[in-house]
Image (cartoon, rainbow, N blue to C red; front, side):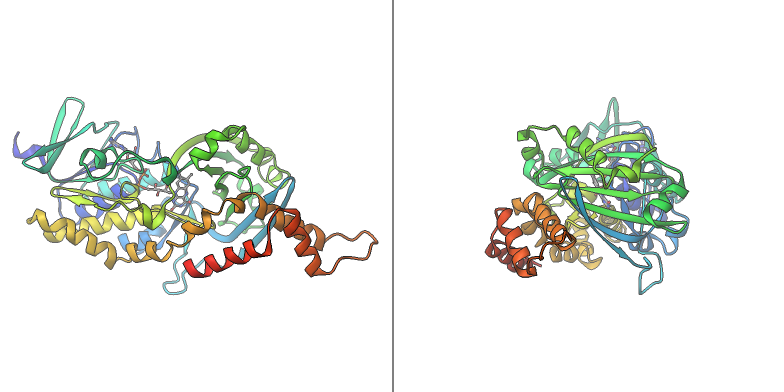
Length: 431
Ligand SMILES: Cc1cc2nc3c(=O)[nH]c(=O)nc-3n(C[C@H](O)[C@H](O)[C@H](O)COP(=O)(O)OP(=O)(O)OC[C@H]3O[C@@H](n4cnc5c(N)ncnc54)[C@H](O)[C@@H]3O)c2cc1C
């Protein structure tokens, strides 16, 4: 092996974690190779999706202005579906970060965004090699020293696993076990093309503005939920399901998703659109508890989904921003301690705290307990719709008192006031 074959860092995966890491390292003059199995970065990647721009700002101030983003999210929506009914809460806000004045979040299409971010890393000097799958890690004297892809061996001081939620690299490094079904959801998604004007009319948006909608009650009682994001000239619509529960269900995931598309409150939003993309992907659901206990060993670091960095609160999902931040954290540790490999891992952990990633995930840990409550996926949506139904029913009869309406709906849904109070107490305690 000649010196030319050896890199300072090899990164496996050109998702947001890998490209953000490569960008930061290359900008600091490091010799970086990113290996991506997809023919182009992002072509295999799935997100709802929305990106919080603070992470791009952390990478480079003002970067969001040239980023390949779709619409600035100004409408935060929560939709609660039951049968053919739906309650929708639409929180309309300017969508700017109060501190910096930068837009807070944008909808994104990953095939476009990931390719753009990888190109930015290349501009900084990183090499991004696509269409190559890394098969194995090379280990020498207890250290990870490179990777094998097909016939090729490539060496580096440090290998960084940015290969996503089901990280074979981290498994090979002996840092994680095989994936456990109850810690991940399966997401299915369609991108449905529609003219920009139609999207703006249907969602009450101004040009350039976007909506992000989380949907509860569309999974037939399976732990999970739906999502809808407006892009420039398409809508991303999908569902996430816990695979164990979905497997036991009489309807397939595909059938449940079709029901969502045909729901009377959804169909008019996508009517006339053409599905141009269908995708499915795993998403980590365990939040803070899903962070792997060890994220490094000598010559090896894990970032992004590979490390378990995803927050699901039920009303939002965050993984792309955490992937970018963890990529920056890893790069900073390598830049600071690349000549002392033993110090890189511990410094990476410090950077994750310093950049507020670990504290943010810890703060959101309690959502996991709430989302584990089985009846929030069927009885609660039905209860909410029953209450609204009673509130808005005028039929010449003397209406029930509000208290009786609510108590009656709670009982009719097989719930008790105590169960609701317990959920409330759990919520207050864990959040
Ligand atoms: C349905 C769904 C909805 C979501 N919605 C949102 C959302 O709205 N907002 C949000 O912030 N997050 C969302 N997420 C989470 C987000 O998509 C992830 O957290 C994010 O993509 C993680 O980025 P990453 O770079 O770590 O991994 P990935 O994006 O998965 O990238 C990993 C890369 O590694 C490559 N790779 C894998 N193995 C190899 C190999 N052996 N050799 C070479 N290359 C390899 C892959 O091709 C891929 O390009 C969602 C996820 C899903 C599934």
